[in-house]
Image (tube, rainbow, N blue to C red):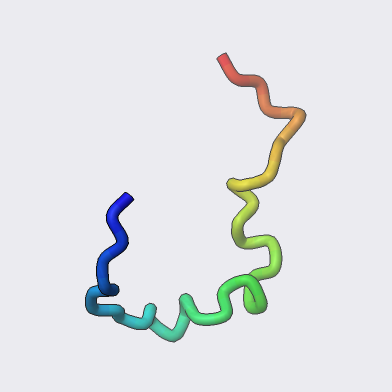
Length: 39
């Protein structure tokens, strides 16, 4: 992996700031769901 200087950075819109404080269970896609059946 090449280490290079960081490029431009843009802050997200206000509704995306502190997302997990505003929506504590917002990222449920990252949790296991034992009742889901995968085909």
